[in-house]
Length: 280
Ligand SMILES: C[S@@+](CC[C@H](N)C(=O)[O-])C[C@H]1O[C@@H](n2cnc3c(N)ncnc32)[C@H](O)[C@@H]1O
Image (tube, rainbow, N blue to C red; front, top):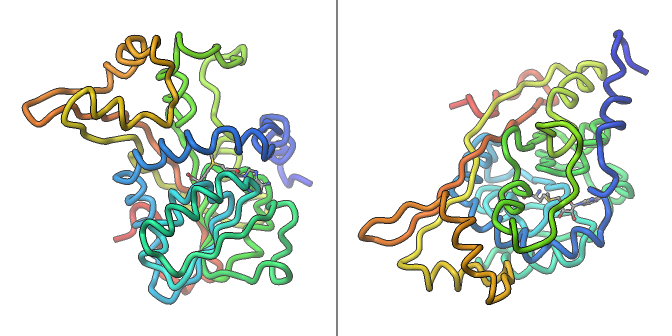
């Protein structure tokens, strides 16, 4: 029940697509998500720094996908539990973990709906839900954490909107809503206000986010994007679609697509040091 005039939970429920929780949809997009996640490593580092992970900390990454957050978090944490409902996503995560020789990542094939904090999943020091349907259940995120919770989501163009641009004219147009700007998920204003209704005064910080990479030439770039599976007769169109995000110099072609991520975070105990994007 909302405390004020506005029922933020109802608004969140009304503005959330149930498709986001369908394993089949995530399974089908996993190879592509994995490809895009690799292009985000430079910006993902900023999110990891904001989490202030200590060497003894246990981290639970809810809706971990192919491990965009997990892989970098594991380099700083004691251990990371990577929970995801999609087998395909977890297969990519396991391959990425193996390729980096990480030994402190525990993949867990489980729906967030079935997680019972302290019963089938132990409490973790740090809980992160990044671009994850888990942000629907803020109470459960809070219950799973001993120290900090981080909820992260795009607050500018999302991975999906970048992807849609790259495949424009190549693949069928995705269905569009009637309005203009649509947050990719229940926007962070809803998350913040739902937390207020729960008695949690969360902090909000913003970070640059985006996609970046460099290649020697077009051949190398096109080989890199094999995971997009662009049909050979549509390569010219792909080159035109990605062109606005590329610069060229003597060293080759450089991709940069910039957007923003918002980090909503709170600590379980006021005596804990601050974290978040602005903490040094
Ligand atoms: C947009 S991806 C985000 C991946 C990663 N957290 C990141 O920030 O790059 C959303 C992930 O949530 C997972 N997911 C969706 N519904 C879920 C659920 N009910 N329980 C656990 N994971 C879920 C999907 O399979 C997908 O891997």
